[in-house]
Length: 377
Image (cartoon, rainbow, N blue to C red; front, top):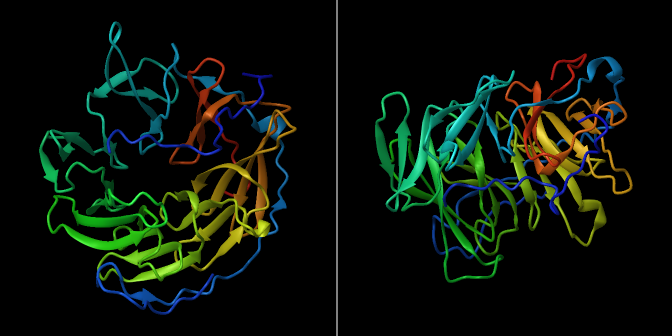
């Protein structure tokens, strides 16, 4: 891989995760008919505008950067994931003549892959539970004993809460084609599928994800037609919503591992100062636009990795940004190590040590050890 330019071949800079199945204060809502659709609005917190300068912290990459290591062969495999202990790479694979279809694991040090299960589905972070569709229903299965139960989502994909006590899913309006008017009902239940209830209806938006364990969710759009569009934090007990940031169509919202931060993109706004990558704490206490644009992943809480888009440079670098303290590190010097990433297909291990990517050259999985920093990420 040395000497190969870093290329992001997709027209989009950001990862499209393929599911196996389907600051402006605002005090109150008017014109509401449905009490659920028009959830109580809480005051939007005034963000602490700390405008990081991102002072460069010197790192000697000549001694720290090692070339990436190839893990798989035969053109395998897209959109791989990680075990919770960062010791194993997990991916879906299967070839009729040589390998049965299923979820495979491979040690980060390399070796022979092992098939863990033939299930395709959505897994919990600790990989103890898997949700999958069967006969128009969604089941959750526990690997340890094979026990399983249904979730009343009518076959819709579910999302596990961070503490694995609840699940969420969406019902979407079928007759409304306009994205701005499309209505999405967000439902919750316990992990066992009990106490299912509609939490809120969002207009022109979507469920984003869980934060604070199972106490809150994030959603985009409007909580009722008169409301401003934006990113909302919604209490899962009361349905009360708080507008964290007003924006019409935030894209590529990425929640940090512990749910304390999000990164997202604003594009095609009439005010060019609004366009770019934004970062925000999910309690609304910090928000700012980054001085760089490109593909991004979280390394840990408050530590964002960015591969900058530089059109006239074939070999972009890799930066780590400390969002609260304004520090920046260059983790990859393309004069020393060049990655060759296909379709923006890369991920960071839970412990922040490894960068896994799909090679554009041979379509195999490779792993790059990220440099350790003077300040622990």
